[in-house]
Length: 98
Length: 98
DNA sequence: TTGGCACATGCCCATATGGGTATATAATTG
DNA sequence: CAATTATATACCCATATGGGCATGTGCCAA
Image (cartoon, rainbow over all chains, first blue to last red):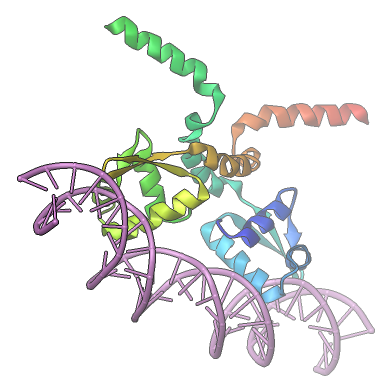
C-alpha cells in the first residue's frame, strides 16, 4: 500500500470494478507490471477478481484497509482538534481526584 | 510507514518522548539501525527531535500521519456500517427523482 | 479451428532497502 | 584533559522490489 502505483489502482477502483486494460491506461504502465501489482493487491486481499469472458474485472475490498485505518486512527488525537475538549475534561477529572 | 520497525517506533513513542536507547531496547535492534529508521521518520516529518544533554529525545508528530488517515478514510464506506443508513437515504432520494 | 484479445507468468536487470560493523562527533564525568 | 556515554554516519552486503520483455493460457469471433 506504500506503493504509489498500487494506491493509484485502488483509487481507480474506488467507484466500481474495472478490467485490467482500464488500469493499464490509468497507470500508463505496461500491462504485465499492472498485473503484477494486481497480484500483490489480490494476495493482500485488498482487491478481488471476477472473470467476465476474456476480461478480469477487479474490484475493491476496502475491508482489508480497515487495519491500516485503525492503526492511524490511534494517532488521531495527536492532530485532531476533535480530542481537545475531551482532553480538557480528562484534565479536570484528574484535578478533582487530588 | 510500511516498515514494521518504524511502526514499532511510532507505537513506542505514542505516550511521550523517548531517547534513542529506549527504542533500541524496544526494537531489539542495533543502535545504528534504529538511528537510521529515526532518520527516515524524521525526514518524513512523523517524528521530531529535541536535544537533551547527550541524549536526543524523539517524539511523535502525528500531524504527518493525517494524509494517510485521510486517504484510507476515503475507503471507509466500503467496510463501515456507519454509511449503511446514508446509502439507504441516498437510494431513496434517487428513487424520488424518477 | 484459427487468429486475435485480455490477461498472467517467467526471467532479467538496475536500484532500493534493511541489517551489520566500524567509526566519527558531541556531551558528560572524573 | 582523558575516558565514557549517547547518538549519528559511512560502508559493505544480501535480499527485495519494480520495471521491461518475451511468452504462456483462456476465451471469443470469424
